[in-house]
Image (cartoon, rainbow over all chains, first blue to last red; front, side, top):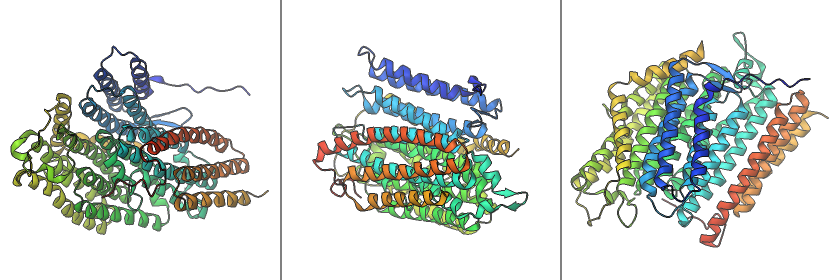
Length: 490
Length: 99
């Protein structure tokens, strides 16, 4: 039998190809000592920028195709997620250039791993086959384990890497076993085929009640739950965020969470209505738990990185509302929420990096006392990011929450909306406490702050503009997200 | 032989792996238990693939073996760097990050 090689349309794979070539270029240039270390960071930004531009280009052309024997899907859904990942990568690289400085540390591998992780995320969002989703997940996770422990001389960084590795690999094994069981029950690993096998005409098929299949689906939820840090699978997140380099904490909290949800949404939004109602019940319960536990524990935190970690857990809960709604609006509002969340969370971590002194980072919330008068620019950025995280209008965070809640009302999940609203009120307490500390408390000791690095300010200004722009003109993004979901339905 | 025997064996191996991860405190033993879980999944894949007569499952196994090898390389490197700082890889003693 002759081997058939499918036609590959390379122009559709531009974003991925650009990222691969950028990472190879970074790898080669890292070997020359004459190259300034900051150049590598700028190369990353330019590469991710070109990939971003070509993703937007493909999105506007309305691309909707599969490649590699239907294993790889290039449609507006995966392209929208590409934009989320690439925007996060660019923001993180901008922040990293000043964070790493021009010290002795090797920086080639750092940017290389960031690009590899980005590639993994893009694979996850584009995966039309569980094997691609798994490989993307592993490519992303393996790069992140190394990045979390990148500061080898710091015990905290190594420890964060080890915790992330052990729990991440544990979760991957669950995910893989879930795939095996789903494959055994459905006889295929192609996601649309699995979903279509769940129903025969209007009736649900036997598959949707087969114990093997439901066990597989349950294991997939556990696997995804670890990766996107939803309660009760969240324990790794605060430790990893605290110990990892702050830029990497920002990166882990943004892109990988969006990537996890990208694959989670592809499989579950379409599958949930065809599964027994208990499956939806489990998702609703997880969403409620995640929001409540994340927000309540965040109140007790004194370390700002840990507070942001618990807040990011709570935000995963809000995205889960969109997932539980399991309707087209739920999917598009979850996509919108993830985009907004990535920008504002990287912004908040950026401000934490900006508040560095000569002795290192100031991570206690009490260190922020009096910043409002002594560092007005920094305090202003922080206030904007925190207001957006808390969901105050006219910031993007408000828009994101509004659409997520709206989709849940349409799906008649009223309890979820009530829980979400109560949680938003709880979260306002700890976000505003930081703002109050900055503007209304006297500092206990005078801290010598480092001057603002220019690249960091550029990154923060971009994030701030994004948050306000989406907050005032939400249709810019929402229309894209909605058309992405609509095109998948046709 | 019927498929269910293979699936039961793989479920047993997977459970042993899970219990090992939860009970043992040595990072390397935990890591070995995770490998056991991955191999349990591999066994399920091969058995199902043989039963269905499709090649997807066997293909999956090759990728999983490659991924597991990469995971071991990275994992041991990280565990060694933790050992350099603390002279222990007992996960209960490596707990400076707490809140």
